[in-house]
Amino acid sequence: MKPGDGGRDGRPRESGPSLRKAPEGTDAFALPLEAIGEEGLPELRGVLREILGESSPADSEFVLHRLKPRVHRLVVEGEGRVRSLILKRMDAAAARRNELVARRWLPAMGLADGCAPLLGVAAERTGRRVWHVYEDLGEGRLEPGDRDPRRLEAIVELIARLHVRSAEHPLLAECRLHGGDLGIHSFTSNLRDALRALEALRPPWVEMSPDERDLRDRLLGRLRALSDELPERVQVMVEAGGPEMLLHGDLWTINTFTLPSPEGLRACLIDWDHAGVGRFGYDLSTFLYRFPADARPGLLDLYRRAVEKAGGRLPDVRALNLLFDTAERARYANRAIWPALALLHGDGARWGFGELAEVDGWFEALKPALPE
Image (tube, rainbow, N blue to C red; front, side, top):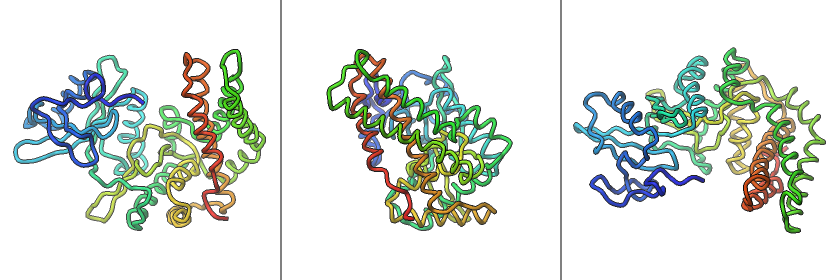
């Protein structure tokens, strides 16, 4: 993982007139705007001036709180008011995808308020990195243990609206071009690529201990068994997976928010870096597996009712479990590819065996999402 965007070594600066205590849950100290580093800083300053207007305070009054690497909360104080923005740095492809989600795809599907408002875009001169400036949604993030029925209902209904309204939409071709393919092709290609990478892990290219050879062989056994089941799983995806639609692609609870509004709670999804085209099971399995097993049937009922209200229909629980299981195993296969390639071409990247052991543990622990 890359270090944070504090000083050149990734740590927050520890001196200077702008240093202040940060809020609970962020880094220990608030930082001046310059702490993001030099990448795109002049362009970002220009966009911030456009957003905040002529009355915006001087740069010295911008105070930064690092939320995670490449994501900061910017608090602007001046003229008796405080405004909070979120700054997120991405590579050019992810930035383009997020911009299309916010400004083209969701509005075209009647879901303009389904993501955080994108206020400005600032690309550094080389074009490799892009800053997005979003309205701050506050502290409404959903936690996995949250059982508040109002919040859960608002979020699940938004997920269902996204799936129903984007199903077979004409813009899916563009979503696939600038996003990704998260459907049947994603499953089959991840499986083939993982098998190729793991089969190549052998002397003389990679030296392995007996335990490491056993780990590789266990993973290969799991993936070969999955390959044998490919026809059945693909058939279920075709017959029960529903139409193609726009998917968020990374529906962990940390990417879901609820906000108060005059009409009640409003749900919002953030971080569309992995958005793409596929079937509903890919998104829904990610979301359901973030909750304890006893909470999942109730969440599925919320989703089912929202889909049926829009004229859709879900398959039975057995088919759903197979769809969810296939989506999870496709993700696990993908996560096996990269440590295997690092071991092959990473100049002795022995950490790859640790990550492969973690993937093997996920396969071992995977249980059906729903009771049948």
